[in-house]
Each structure stands twice: as C-alpha cells, then as structure tokens.
Length: 403
Ligand code: NIG
Ligand code: FE
Image 1: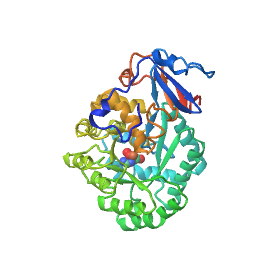
Image 2: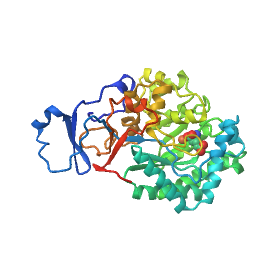
Image 3: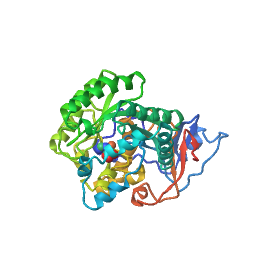
Image 4: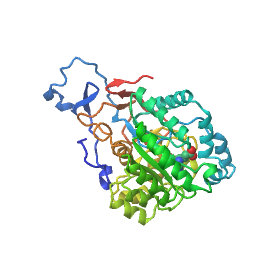
C-alpha cells in the first residue's frame, strides 16, 4: 500500500489493497520492497543470500495495531462476570464499588514486579496473536503513587518489548469512593499532583478521561484535557459507552486523536466527528462481553469517517486482546466488510497511535512486523473462522517471533 497521509475513511476503507501471488523483501528489520511474483525477476531482489520463507497459499498481512488497552492489571474479575450473568449491569456493579474501583484496590495492593510480570505475559500473548504495536493505559491506580506505579510498569514493558508501546495516563478513569461527593478535590489531585509528576518523568504519551454517565462529565473532562495540553499530552478519550453524554463533542473540541467506544452515537456525534481530525475507535469485544449495543460502524462509514478498531483488553469489560476476534465481531455484529475491518485494525490503528509512518501497512520503509497465515482460501477466511487460530508465523522486525 502507498504511504497514507490520513487514516482510511468512508469508501476508502473497502479499497482493495491485496496483491495476489506476491513477494516481499525485508532488510534490517524493515520492508524494503514487494510486488507481484511475475515482476520479481526484473527487480533483482531474487539474487539475495538471506533466508527465504515460502508463503505459497498463505496470506501475508501487516501486524495489528491495538490502539486501546488496559493491559496492566492485578487480577481478573470473573466474579463480576457471574454477577452480570445473574442480572446486574456493569453500571450497577460500578456503583456498588466494583468494576474499576475493584481493580484499583487490587492494583494498589500489588507490587511493581508482580504487575510487570503479569502484564508482560499478556503482552507476549498479544504479540503471538498478531499485534505489532499497542497502547497501554494507567487508570487502575487512582492515587498519585499508584498511577505512577502503573506508568512505571508500562515504561518497563516499553524497555523490553519487541513491539512499540504508547503509554496513556488515565488517572480520570473513575472517582475513588472518598471523592464520590467531592469531585473537585479529585480533579485537583489529577491536575495539580498527578499530571506534573507524569510529565516530569515523561511517563505518558497521551491523556485519557472516562467521560461518561456516572464517571467524568464533559466539563470535568475538558478541565483535565486542557491541563494535560500544557504538558504536551494529546487526548485519546473514552466516550459514549454508557450514553449520549457529550463525550465525543468534548473530545473533538479538545482535538483528541481519537474518541473510543461510541456504543451510543446520534447524528450530533457523527456531525461533530465529520468536521474534525478525531478518529472514532470502536471496541466491539466490549459490546460483546457486556451485552451492550454495538457501535454503528455503518453510519460512521457512510459519513466518511475513518473508523478504527481496537481490543480494549481489560479485566472488566473485554478480557481479551485477540484482535482476530475483534475482526470477526466487527464483521458479524457491525456489518463491516472483512477488508474494511482489516484496514481499521491496521493502518487506522497506526494513525490512532501516530505510528502511521512505521507500521499499519505493507509499505516500503515500514517495520517488517507481519503475520503469515496457514494456507487459507482468502483474507475473508480469517474473520469468518472466528475461533480458529489461522496465524502460522509472526514476524517482528523481519525475524520470526518465537516466544
Ligand atoms: O474501556 N470504560 C472504561 N474503562 C474500561 C473498563 C474498565 C474496567 O471495567 O475495568 C473500558 O471498557
Ligand atoms: Fe477502555
């Protein structure tokens, strides 16, 4: 694919970017050249003495870019899963001190090494599932020291990770119990204490706020995003998961790179996105897991928006980072074509992390982070076979990844 200036939007999401019967040449960890097999002889690239991987009958695709995760957490939350099966909603569980506050209590008790080890194991699993760059948020600390602890864990992951990681500061994930009736003091804690410390140690690339019913209002969100902008932190926010709450509009107003979730969108949200550079990022495995409405991807594509897809990997609403499953859900439940969802999971994910020059497509000069499937009939077969792992080889920086 040629280098893109902008994420793929509207009809362009369905553009045919597949080359049948192709070759690909990697050098020094990067994609150096590629093309149709019948043209290879003319290029001279067949006269190399490197390793050859035979991909006959297989599909070679760029690795996924997962632009929204909460990969660092202390414990799973299957007890809430059972409460929901018995009839409680995600919001009811949150209001009783479960949900995010439950994960926060557990994270506050955990030490940095334990958090690092468990997050590292999850990260390696995500890479084996084909993710070639990832975003990781804080937001289960909710105290100054625990938010910093989480972000230090993300920094350690960055140091050892074979893939690019972007860190997002999400101190505004929920109001801790003691601030439920005193929002102003928690906002002060975020703005006057957390943000300066996060910035001084360069612990985050982005800032996030859970702007939604029962969480942060659009006004509170704007205060935090404005304060973060002074430290150069651009917003990527949680918006419109639980209702039509003004999250999308405040994200657009503050020049957010992306507004994520959008299970609830009306014409007003779509209108405000149309006049912006903000990417709507949809997280269908959350709608699947919580049994809430799926985002209306078709209306967004019809409005020429650059829809992006991500996993939202977290213990409460999407305990999986498997992007191939996100792909299947996008097709089955949001009526995205396999090719549209593929672009939303790769090149548009790269734009949502400002990694579009390095990742997200098979383009000359980009990192050779690739997936090679087993022999399969077509690209469409990948999301069609929603439970089969059809990925045979994961290539990172031009080399097989074997962990
Ligand atoms: O993206 N919605 C807010 N945050 C997460 C859920 C976090 C949790 O339940 O632990 C999400 O779904
Ligand atoms: Fe999330």
